[in-house]
Image 1 (cartoon, rainbow, N blue to C red):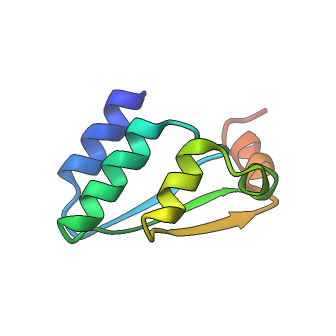
Image 2: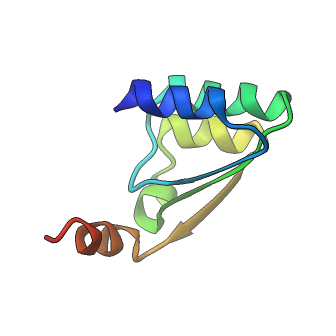
Image 3: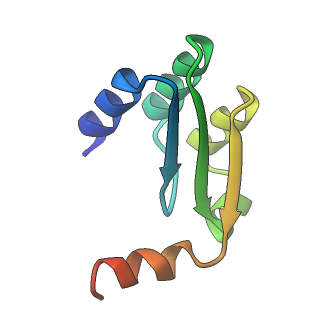
Length: 84
């Protein structure tokens, strides 16, 4: 899964919207930051509770100036879309 996400970041042209429950992977944060330098506009949507915890990947994304939004219903929405 991580390799697909990295490829999507590298192949994105102008914009990329990311919605995840949690964001901890530094390699993905680094890839998003590098993509910003090359002109990719992106933002990350995470679960509100996880955003408040501020895990390492999310801290790096924020410190590199990417927009991070949180929503308390992300976990519920993901469960619903997966049929749980």
